[in-house]
Length: 305
Image (tube, rainbow, N blue to C red; front, side, top):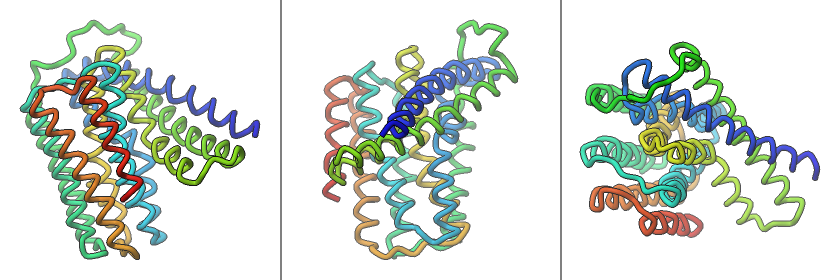
């Protein structure tokens, strides 16, 4: 019991420390290169925090365990766009220009739609995986092409964190976040097993735990009034996972699913929840506390899918 509790505690400390480093050094990096924090969140931070999903997908492609990776990606993405957005919006309302919502929110919905199409037949070929990866690269190119250089960071940053040091700090922060998230999931699951928590609750702990890196980074960002990194991380991760993480695994070995109906249901609900959240953004222009409660409630039906 002691060791799992220690893992849980170390994981939490790693997440909080890493999240702070990611937010601070991502802002410094954005300042140094003259790019918006939102773009840094959508690209560098989103990719870095998705490393567990990328690794799991490649492993699934090599050892033919696709059912796990689809459940992992669909569950993680659904939790991020519902619980993640909801929790962060409870801390501080999330707002974004409608043009950026259309680009990044629309990119997220399109990414999930492409993943849904790729699994519809019960298998995803290597070619389809390569096309998903190519679509992700196109999204990055479109994001870069539409950079608003007037939206760059204008806050003074100390010499200690600028340039290469900011890049190293950002990478170090991502390592702490990913490692902390892993320890949190493993420790929480072991503690739950020891105290006799039901399997469904353990699944909830594991599912939410895998989204901890993105949620912690986003929460730290809004607390520091850097909502661009927060929104960019949550939306960007949900483009990265369906296209790059899932696509890379499929490109490595191809995926064949034993229960295509379950795969379709979980992927379809992931898409539906994302459409609703993006719709709230577009209609209201922001997600406040009432919208946050609505987002969190969207996570409940995942246990019925």
